Length: 351
Image (cartoon, rainbow, N blue to C red; front, side, top):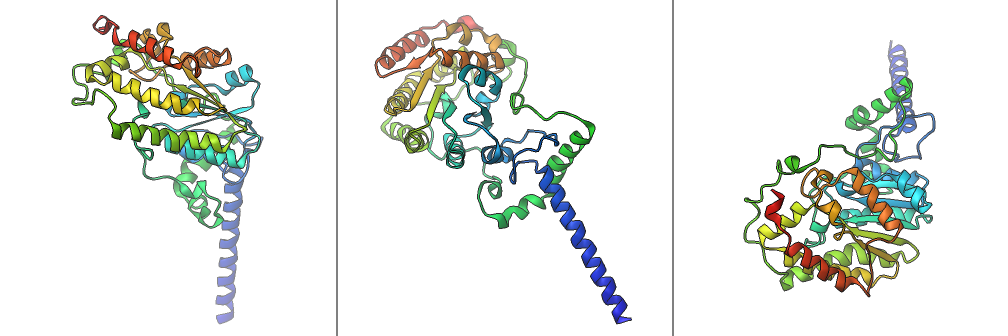
């Protein structure tokens, strides 16, 4: 009797072990966030969750260029970038990210991939005057970011990953659906125009009591934000070329600065940032604030900051032709023209 019970126990244990091993193998094959290996040609992948997926893209994809940023960079198409610059690129965007999160992701990518020679980085213009560690997000899947194999159990035996990652990839594969393209990854297509901008922007109720100029504490904070998160990274990787560009918000954004009384403050932060970045020989800095036809055409915007995909395409073409290139020789003149235009614009005429 005892012998039969023992055999039954061993059989159950062996069956359970076999099922677990098969499940792990199944998971390893479909690996939805590319933590273990590069994508297999026979698997169809759904690319959708940036903070879970980008580190795996950095680890295992074949690429020599990265385009990154917040939602302001989500509509870039790697196919267009590659056609213009002769690169093999991936897109790694982080919606709502601060400079630190973007910098840390780039550091991991640059450390792991010696072929990464070009970075395109959209610098949120409204992110200059912030603490260096500013973030909107507190919970990160850090078990995906490190090289500790023991905490991968949080990935492999995570029911959310199975439900939202493994099963969709399995279903897509057996039904013959194609993988999400890198062009489509994280991209969005929303209605644009003044009526949609006004759904989230009320010029009569903007933030009050904003400083008119950049005080010493804010100046130091801006310099630390840019130095620690951008300049230090750039200097650690002198063989990589960094294409950095200020995001060209709509004319309604500039109106909001007028309503706040903080436009001079923003220009001063831009000056601090520009001078720090121009000191880096491997940085190519671009400013598109003089692309007035784009910025004043509200059909290009879904809200006062976010531009549609056609603007992303134009920015790639501008950079390929060095349109908007900021240099040590022209940055002061460009900033003065910028001040004159946006401080004297007829904002009431927008509405």
